[in-house]
Length: 318
Length: 298
Image (tube, rainbow over all chains, first blue to last red; front, side):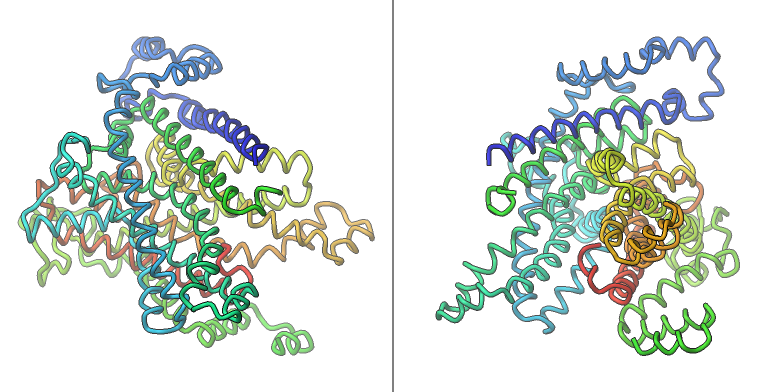
């Protein structure tokens, strides 16, 4: 187990380095000119050569690329992640202020996806090809196809239309104002949670159907164990392993999905900052946020892998 | 199976006949997928015929009918500057489908060729490639697409490239594993035995077997590509306005004061949902038809 953890962590560190290089390549080298990204192709033509050179020097963009990269790495290690080009806020402050809200949304949505997805999967798998199963399968196909941010817009619209209600716009922490905080996060969490639940229900169904046919399940039945206990003790724990892995992959869906969904709800979370950075063409904020999101994604997946290894000796010993 | 045997004996049927037979099998074995296939075809037809069937030009403002709810003259209503929503939804299909098809074809093809090379040559090249693919997969799809689209600056080509890059790992992984198992096949070994060159073995013996997984991959990723395109448009890094895309229309609807008019929100979203649903279910049908073993894995 320890060697597995060590290997997985070392591998994760390698991935983080690779990710940082890739982010740097995409954000700094691909356009050839971050000024184009900041000012837009039209604004660029209005700048004089002198202004351009000035901006480049001020932003530290006229140094060799590897110097720029190392400077960025140093910023990351120091933990301040550079400054926004348009706002007087460092990216680190932004993350501390807005990150908790998005983390909360992600956490609630994952819990919700399990609470909804697993029971649906069990009903579907135990009574395949019944009405309940068909309804569940259609619902999951539908929820995979519907863009989450659009569902979010519909919810906001419906609440406004019928109840004249709108979630507060100001960000409040859970501990200062639990009720206000809940109003902020519950909408995005439900939308993202149901989106994941659809995948979980589908995967859980097929995984459970497979496990039910295994010998050990038949043995458990044959020795006279009651049907519910067979499912709860023998089938479900084994069927859930692939679902845990899937849940880790789906975290990508939550992290990325929270950007348009937060925009739809107007939630002042980190996803909304990402939207602002993109619409303001704020290359530096974007570069750091993309990096942070990917690192979080990588680390959570390592956590999922370790959980799986902890639960399943077959993987641990390989 | 018997059908294929008879075709071997008889004269080889034309491609059109083969396509017809494939379609008939699809209808018989998977009527639901076939139905959604027709829906997908209708959406494609709507996109292509948009200039003919759209009641108004998509960019023309009518200042006497600004932000009007659905009516006889404007079935889906009009937006803040009096553009007809129905026409914009129809034209929106053009951009959405062009981007999705372009991105998936480009991304899956690059990924497939890369996977072919990885699986075939193996060794250090494969090792390095797998690492790069893992790095690519460490980004959530939409975030990578956002970053690339933003870095390259707006435009349709940019959006296609941005989404295509997020599709590369999938093509690479699947085709690589297919090639790895094909490499052990006896007919490939036989080809090597009689001294076939690397190019010949890859192109004549291995590539044709990759066509089915390639098609399955491409159709199953169309839906995802459409959703990413819409999200990019919604976030303002997609095809820049005033070009009508479904994502742009949804983003525009938020700019009309505190309460967005419902018709500006509902119709583009319904268009996205139906299109994605159609392509996903068609993809499922094609996958079951071409390769039932891949159920759940692609």
